[in-house]
Length: 170
Image (cartoon, rainbow, N blue to C red; front, side, top):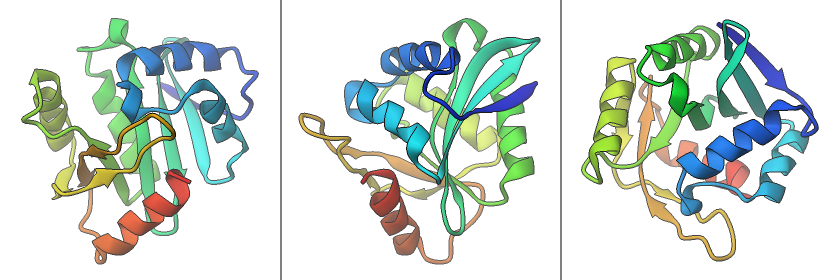
């Protein structure tokens, strides 16, 4: 498995990633095309293409913040799911980043959310906040009640959330 940072919005993989991103994540959980392209200008963001057998099978959008990495989006493309590839991706994250935080939909929302929560638990993440609210991604989009998960226990959860709000959602 290879992990290649995409540094330019002109990379041929960007359109494939955005197409999957915009169909896999609900409108309120994602950026529009122009805001997505702006990610490539931000010094704290890494958009990483995940390759397996030389084929693009998914991506990560991560933010390198002061004391942790925030995984904003993590997706294995639908045609490659249920092959344990997601677990290999979390292994990569653990090897490269000691402190990882991510958001997910609460498990009680639907079967997919329940399956996702179970996946993250099996792969070393624990629930650290059930009261987390993801800010709106912009005009016409709602803020959402999500859960925060982490592979460690943050000392000051308020500081962690404030940094996510200030940097990721601004």
